[in-house]
Length: 123
Length: 253
Image (cartoon, rainbow over all chains, first blue to last red; front, side, top):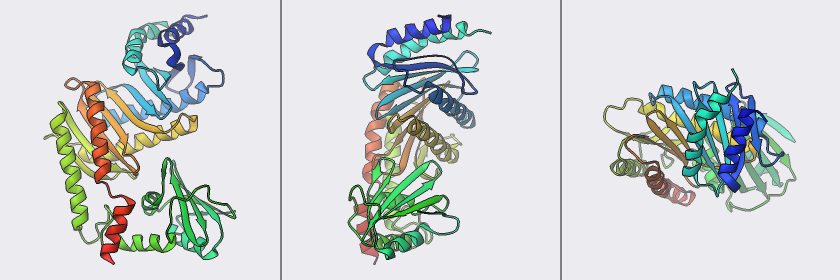
């Protein structure tokens, strides 16, 4: 197991039963590492679609002079989808959780792991 | 099965045609990422859906769609009944009534008393929002075409006109992405930037959105979500409902 996959597995362990999926994605929408509770979960589609969401979010943030985009949280009737940029913004990190999750705790875990993941991305 | 484009024919024309046929039918209208389903029986509209919205409010939402594709199939039974009126004539009358003003965005002859009341109520709500949120930057109520229905911003903030179109562009992309993933219906979306929290809600049971921007260094996120939840309900309460519009219509004929 490479370092990135190992870190994502640790994230999954920390988030417990509310965890559904996580992936590290480049800005072309291609996942470079992922971990899901179910092999049926379409992490590839999520990665590609949310790359577009993050790009548009960044553009809007610039146009409204709100500063650089840090992260995005979508609340749906079924899940929470958290997305945040890593490092210089060349990659972003997705975490999908059930509605039973505690969002504040998930954000703390993401804050804790963001730099570790960025450092672990091969260059 | 029939297919067509709204560039060549209006929604009213299509609905009139279906009603004259007096047969069970399903009309699917695609407008960007949105898809409305209308069901007919015995010359009446009996059911309509748009995302998680259903009933007459869908008709009010789609009546201004000028672009998009439609697909018509006869002998499709309606899955439910949420409308119990002569849809075709009501649709035509509503459309005609835009010129006299009961619909929010109809400004052909300037704002009516009702429009002014709704706008004033929304403005008061948005001003109230500012008083409860430290670091308030701006808030806007926007329709699904990105047009600002009402907005309020702190003095000196100059991007007010831009915010509506940007909010809707973003939330539509999120809604499409979530729908394609089968991840449920979007309830709200929080964008966190270096300086700002930008929270976008779908106003329940309406085709409108409420967007609120606050300085993230002056507001707690939990407080923003709490106050936002209260105010999105207040916005929903003052937006015209099908019943209210029906009353307004009856007052104008």
